[in-house]
Length: 188
Image (cartoon, rainbow, N blue to C red; front, top):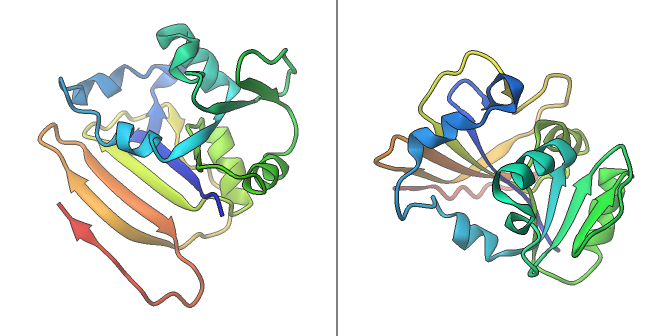
């Protein structure tokens, strides 16, 4: 079955953006030639799900081809329908139903790039299979929280933890399956 993965960066105090959707804190860990495993990760996916606010920000900053590169399907979750363009579909239905449809089709894995509202919707329905979280070495003190309150507890299993000379720490978790005694941890 195609798994749903979250691959996202957050401050040490749990924010994915500063106030006003400011992502400038990510520049703290920018380093020539270092992508923190992003290229390897995106080679495993062929479908991307993203919230409209995050999509609009990235398109404005990096251009539409950052997501719709002709090699993957992009689903933008929005409350306001828009015309589809290229391989980008603007979707206003249930994220659970979308994921069920996608998982029933052949293909590689599915990547949710945020934002916080979309991640929260998937968490509430317990649909996330793995979470790759890059912790940026900064305390922002405010902004958009990665995890919202008001959902059930979700047990995770640590798959891998990596540290980088920029101070970034990357944690790779998968949803802990019931009665799964296995525990594989690789520290780098």
